[in-house]
Length: 245
Image (tube, rainbow, N blue to C red; front, side, top):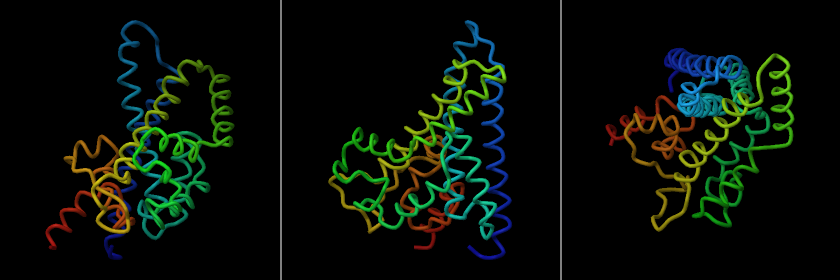
């Protein structure tokens, strides 16, 4: 990444981040506080939940870029502030707690030292997911979510709406992040990994890659090769790499 490219990358990254955050906030506030339950809206609710789950995945991916300094290159304070706000809004997660864990993942991916990897069962999804869940969901997070839910209810929100339009999308996003962003790229099978990153890319078309995990599944090996590349540039990175061969 050249110095000249940094302002353009920052503008693009912040614009996309603002769009994701704004869409998430619009659904979050509108659905939790103003959702009018009825026959028609009950049928529409699952669609809203799925969209909000995808946007929740987007919040985590924005924070992930912040951890690598790639949302706003050369601006660590801005990255830290945006990452903290996105993880807090997504599910009360702590940016300060996740940052060293994620860098530990990149330091030794797919090994016993990788907090995202489940060495006792490197091919089994369920025990790996249980380990992944325990690693990212803490008592402090539950306290923060509970306090937020109480405040929401004092402001007039119903517990049903909080569960349906915040808790369920957050859990679905967790599953999405695990399956497409961790398990499929790093699971062991009969094929050897290409290098010490112990990561594979899943060959999906860019649209499906965007919908599954904001490109972090289909371009996961590329991400490990170039962790400073923001999520939205990963398809271009692959094209540039192939063109340079």
